[in-house]
Amino acid sequence: MSLLRRTCARFSPQVHVLAKRSLTSLKLHGESLDDSTSPALIHGIHVFHCPDEVGIVAKLSECIASRGGNILSADIFVPEKENVFYSRSEFVFDPAKWPREQMDEDFSKLSKMFSAMRSVVRVPSLDPKYKIAVLASKQDHCLVDLLHGWQDRRLPVNITAVISNHDRGPNTHVMRFLERHAIPYHHFDTTTEGKREEDILNLVKDTDFLVLARYMQILSGNFLRSYGRDIINIHHGLLPSFKGGHPSKQAFDAGVKLIGATSHFVTEELDEGPIIEQMVERVSHRDNLRSFVQKSENLEKQCLAKAIRSYCELRVLPYEKNKTVVF
Image (cartoon, rainbow, N blue to C red; front, side, top):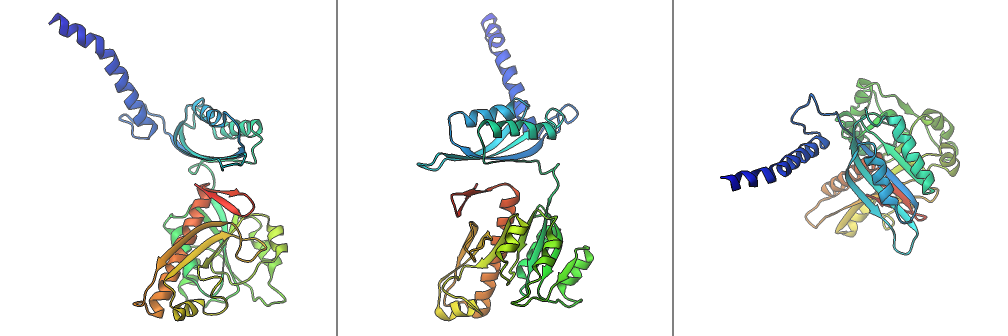
């Protein structure tokens, strides 16, 4: 019996410590057994882009841990034969111990230490949602999907306006939705000579980024420079083979077996900006033109929505001249 007591006495402190560590781990993931004593941890995201050198990961971890934060995931990319470093970290923290202003200051010090090209931190539950305006033409499948995604809170954005070169009737599904949710709709007649870009710029000057949801107008280089922020576009994956009017019918008549959609940043080079997301789907001889078009439009909706989510979650970073890192 004395041997048993000595054995239990010897190991019980370790068991006690292990139990305490396990409960701490549960608390860090927001699953406390006692909500009255557990801090309310919230979620943060940080992305970093800087010249590569030894010790970056250690300093990032130290920055978060020194304030009582806990890293949940970390993605790192260092391109072969290039002296650059990319990272995206998700972490939880107690805002009472790490105030939002202090967090900005801490990551700013790291940015200066490593001469970072980009250092962005976001706390979704504390920071304002991204303000966006949506530009759309006559086709409204992408616009409708974005509006429903916003309504269902699947997209972490606030839509401040919908702008179009197409005059929608007052009793259409889109107009009723916008009126019900008090989202302004602005219709501008556009011609080759006048695209009303100054008017559009005045409407979007307070937005964080723009979304082109099948907007069939080319934005000028002057517009892009004046706006100065990111613009996300979507187009079908039938380019460059099937250009002009009715590309889906052209592709259907040609008997293509693979269709797709591409979401990318807008640049002065038409449809050649850095790619954010691409999706593909097979079609076959069993598809008629209607099912062919429906599959293509579904891909466009899914691809654009995923690109917007990735952008808002700080998953997209510029890479080289015309590429992106998407974590």
